[in-house]
Image 1 (tube, rainbow, N blue to C red):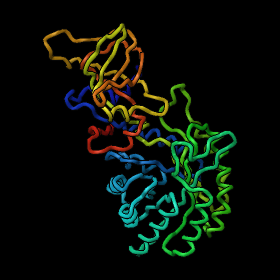
Image 2: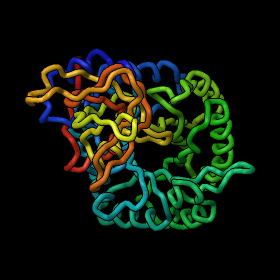
Image 3: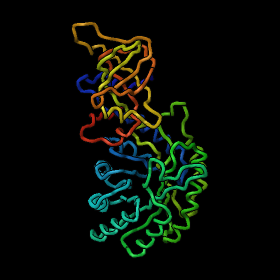
Image 4: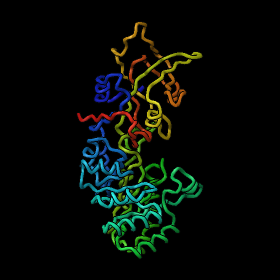
Length: 385
């Protein structure tokens, strides 16, 4: 089990069990993390952060250290604008609809990452009808290196554009004066360390410069997604932002702007999913702990490399039954969650000193549910001190 930050542990001790599960965001920790990032990036390299569904206070905590924000929905954009009405922002993600684009056009300082020629035509149509100019960046797929699968074979299939699509975009841009092309965006292949990632960024910018010239973009921006920030990987590896920034500083030509967006959303750096242990038991000689949370928990704590190890918060007043409180001591425990009528294994054989029914497990938020929060999601608590 991991050691929880003091703020998170103290907050967990004050939550009534019936209010669990909840998501807790440690905003001072987030401020520290992003302040460190800003200090490692050289002057001239912009830092944007993804805010998929920012809880109150998160955007304001981040704003002093970054150049702007990326959002993946107009709901997130509205949340951002409530706190920061004038902060630079960009709407990203495929399949944007008419109403979403119109809302972005009415939000000053918001650009659109365009994922297809059809989407570019829709932006042009909406901009003409609204009689407003639209700032756009064309999202491209970075080329694969020898031995790697094509971008369309990965998880981001169809999310960007190839060179043929850029040719079509040129035709649209020539015929529409409402579109202001600002540059290009791309999400780099995940899992790369600083040196190979910077090398690929350099190659991509070299490929895109002739297109920027052809499109008549005098001062192009290159918005690059990639690089890890926050908790180390399971093997303890961390992303070297200082080396990455130093290598990126060599890339932009005069008049060009290079923008970086870390791959993970801020909830993955400072978020914790607190949930109740509803049962502990043994079966065929193995110890199990069943926790509440269902689909939301499984999605929130499961990342690319599986679930992160949780911490334990012992609730000494969390038992009011007339029989002895079940507990597990100094053994390996498999953690499961009730999901769709069956138990789903979250973690196998994690060592625990002591775990009881009615205690709290605190999982680091690393998965998709920390980014996208539907109405059924748990309450969010933001710690400010």
